[in-house]
Length: 94
Image (cartoon, rainbow, N blue to C red; front, side, top):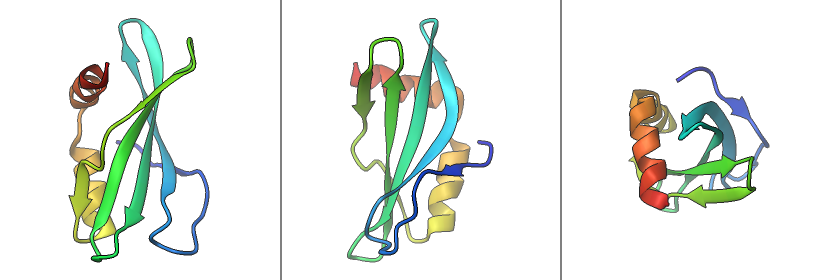
């Protein structure tokens, strides 16, 4: 994955921070993909993906399927996701 863009800053690591990820093409539609990351009370870093379809304004999101002991490890798991994985995740939300 390419470098992420910080959407807003959170002073408290337990507050989610939303990052823009590269967009994704699905059935001819360009989807916007965002990652919401937070540090849970147990110290683990957790995240979920948000998909937005600008043609109809529909938004879908996963549960907190990303989990790691450090923020760096969480980002590594995000970078390891390939476009076909993201497409499959989106398809599972339809």
